[in-house]
Length: 169
Image (cartoon, rainbow, N blue to C red; front, side, top):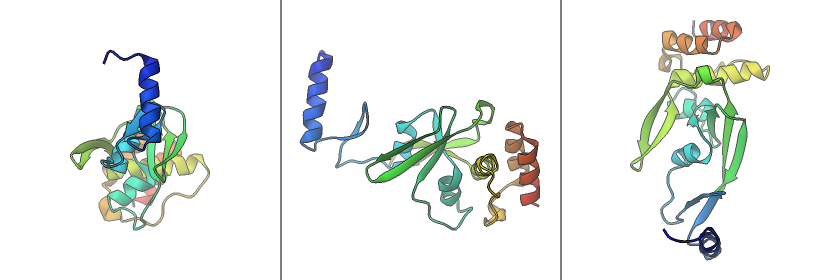
């Protein structure tokens, strides 16, 4: 734009102070009157990432609970952001298992979200890693067991594959 970094930084600071823009994180801003959906923000705050875990399970109707924390997975380090009164969390998974998501739209904006089976497997993988019990309350009709087992195999974890097979029996 032909503006120096110093001038651009000063302008952003002034606009932020006057409430013309909101800062989500360093280098990422939104207009307060035109807030994008939380799921869109989640993909932009930290990447590469896609929405998964409990939030995606709730979104797909696999679990009955409403989930307020926007949970995602990433191939980068685990991280957490609090912005706009919301919590956005990111959990690290293996690159080989970073798949099984699709692009959906809200307000005309695309965001990456795990399909039901991948969210189910991601959640159980992280539960096992944290020595927690696998998910027990969920709608089995929403999960294609063959697809879930295929995703579980990507983690190269025999215990996870066994848990997925047993849970979906």
